[in-house]
Length: 218
Image (cartoon, rainbow, N blue to C red; front, side, top):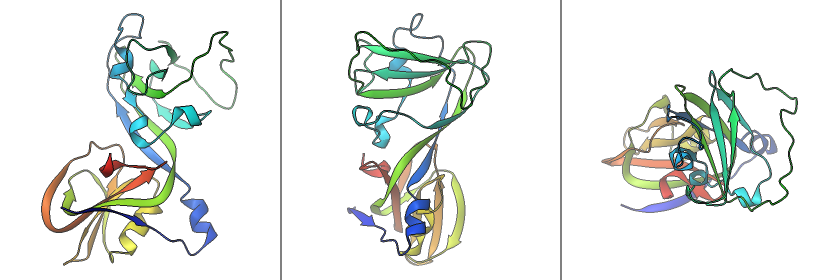
């Protein structure tokens, strides 16, 4: 099985702007209480580093969240969310639900700050949640030949080997594609799915790259 990178070359500046930010859809199950009661809570979170998010180089996170209450964001000194590392735990909802808009909810300065290397998201205390994390997509795809992703699809269309990745790149909730060289079937794969693939002759499986990491190349 061969692995390689493809770069989409854009013809119009409008396309570059439209594809600069993509959505990563993440579902988090109920994993219990906060870190005070569950010491390994950071390790139960969904780490954003796997998508190429470098916390040491970013000063903000843009996200949408659908949950009734008790969502957590972890800012850790550990890139692997080690429970022993220094940690900030941010609880959204706190058991009563919270409507967050453009207003500042909290503004606090740590007198003894540390460098954040890992960010994780999680839901608990009886709640599961749906997150949309906005990340910079580079226009690159990591490709695996003779491989097919078996995740949920956004849509199935006929295309060429060049237009299939181009179409995925223009859809925010498309994380990758399957393309069959014989039938020209192009399957656009949804974000928020566990990476599942199978060996399949004639198919090429490609995934988007975010901040120099690609789903299929991690």
